[in-house]
Length: 404
Ligand SMILES: *Cc1c(COP(=O)(O)O)cnc(C)c1O
Image 1 (cartoon, rainbow, N blue to C red):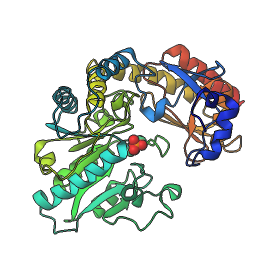
Image 2 (image 1 turned 180 degrees about the vertical axis):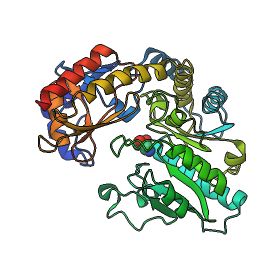
Image 3 (image 1 turned 135 degrees about the vertical axis):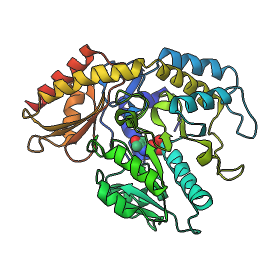
């Protein structure tokens, strides 16, 4: 088959489904262009993007500063490998480290790779610094977690779809209920090198832990000489109204895992940020990535860091998020069972007697709103942080319409 414009017609796109692995079940919308909070399909219909690439598009589609940085870098150099240093690298590392309040960053590409990096880092730190006996390291993780799709990461997933039939599984992880400090204290012993959690569980339906949980985890990790590793891939970089969801409770983890929005919706960029006494345990040759920290990725991510340094996006998430949540609350009892979340991030439970989450998303798409169901009848709403009140009104009235 020839890869030409013929494949861009709706009929050709449907026919090509036979050649696509069915690891996703997309809504029947074929997007052609995007700008800000809006996308346009191949028939010219416009949709408000209330998923924002699972928070990879925090700054909206094609933010001018990010696109400008990408264009400029495309005309200079795009890939060097880490065998050589390029002129965007230092600015990226120091800028991101400063944003995180840490000494160092280790760049990777996808979120899962950054989580893998944090797992390897925690284990090496455990053996070399904490003195855990060889191959005995344990990491405490939470029920309902989502940290990515690699073999090791899905080994400790409690979602049967993510986990089942992919064994044999990687050992060394202990599951505890999310939000339960006593269970975590119980699970930690002298072999424990890290606690790995999401400060808010996005994939699980934007589940916010009880107040005091994150400070409690912090205290426990300090007391027991365990690294607090926060997976802020989805919750971080402005989404909740602060730079990091941990900031909302004034908690500073030992290790941040970042991804998604770090690439500005243009290229995959992920990173682990920590202080030198932790990241310093990894020496040349012990970990790496061909594309990690490439010039194009760094040029875009530098601009992402600059946008976040203004605080403007965090403030918008807080302000517009308060409005979004207030509006969503008016639908509780009117077709919604519950609303959770923080900032411009909401998990909403549609009454399953009315429709499934999938059906809700299909009906929203018919009304020009793109959203994604997660488990059962739960929808996750995460519009770009640039969204304004009028656009939120458009989404709320569509939601009200489908729940009637
Ligand atoms: C998306 C996500 C990941 C995995 O990122 P990929 O880029 O898809 O590998 C890991 N953790 C969290 C919390 C995520 O939301």
